[in-house]
Amino acid sequence: MTIDDPAFLRRQADRCRRLAEGCDDVRTARVLRDMAAEYEARALAAEPDNPMPTG
Image 1 (tube, one colour):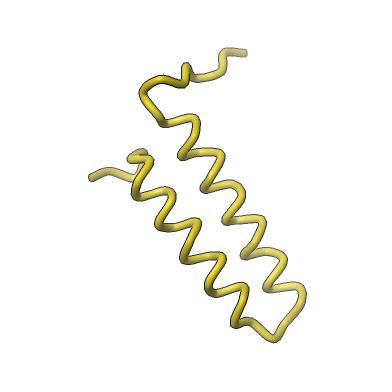
Image 2 (cartoon, rainbow, N blue to C red):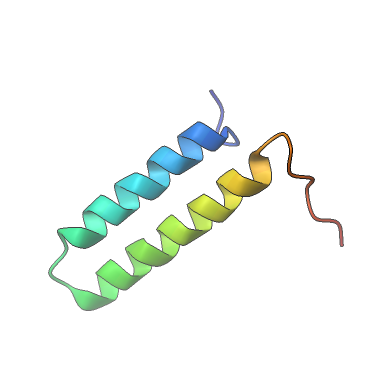
């Protein structure tokens, strides 16, 4: 497993979402939700059937 493994990235996203749910600080919860969204996007891009964007 590497940091580019989609399963690892999705677990990190889930972890961020769980932390956000239990967080009393609104700003911190927002940052954690944003991190979860970024992990999900990275997981999707890392899927073998999804070509990496060029640019």
